[in-house]
Length: 252
Image (cartoon, rainbow, N blue to C red; front, side):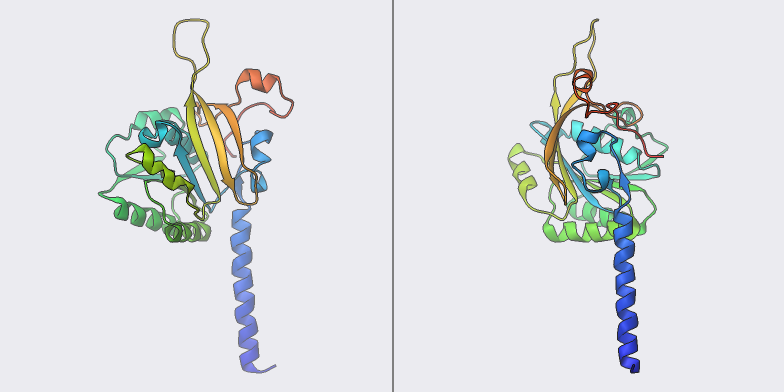
């Protein structure tokens, strides 16, 4: 074998090894531990080292309350430090703590505009320090989503694009194709009535709009509790043998 052929073969082996390492990282998932949800996702959970999009339905497309709580619960359960990048000044940190993402786990980064936000998102993913990076984006172009996905793959950091718009009409942008592994829409529902005066635990309509190599579906769930756990409402869990114990647990 000539020196040139041997060099080409070594280069090919290096490329294959790199691809195998990426695929191995992507097989690491954050499971929901609810069979009716996990069975719709490739590998049985949310892929680490991948980009995921979350948006709100109805008024949640603007105020982002429910999708932010859902994202906070997921990010908290990745187990390490979380960076949360945003532009608007109305982020209510105690609400994220109610969803499991407490102040000792998260660092907030407020920036001036979308361009700076995207740069911060990409830089944090490329660094590899956080286990999850959340960025409140109104726009996500296909080429930018590819860059984010590639950066997440290299460091095994979970990338969460929390889509937020100033007008409901702009939410149509969520229908455009991106490189995200999964895309979710979270819509607030009426909470469960209580036997006493007070407000019951919030409920969401959780739509899995896209899952790479998975299946779209929708679920009715109870909102994250203080440990970042969501649950299937009791009447649904009791009536279905597929609901398991109804809880989404933190990974060990």
